[in-house]
Image 1 (spheres, rainbow, N blue to C red):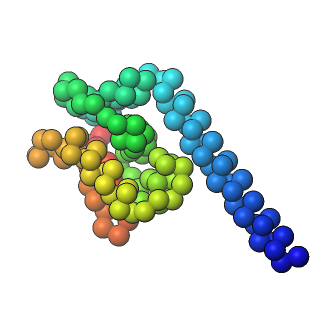
Image 2: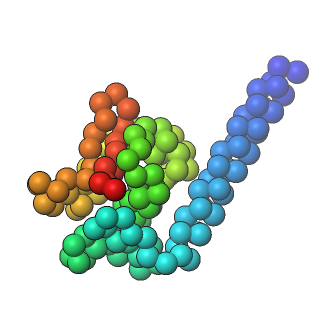
Length: 132
């Protein structure tokens, strides 16, 4: 009987994981069908996966685009690595992987040193800081 209890628990966890992934897919799908997303001097076309800052176009990879959408939907909020990985990847992944993707995106966005938007929040994660 103990084996069945472990198996049932694993099945329940797998179903929950699949449900979370479907939720993320649906959320990103809605974003892709939407119009451009704008915040300060950031503009994103999720359909074409194109990004502009100050009218300078920058190409984004798939995860970078999803990550930018997530940050733009939560401006001026500290986002933990766990929150980021759950919403962008649909699962909790290593902090190193989140850090690498954020660093890549940050390198494309924060190209003007005195107009930095991405900040590391020590012990928490990251923040897209936009003056309102």
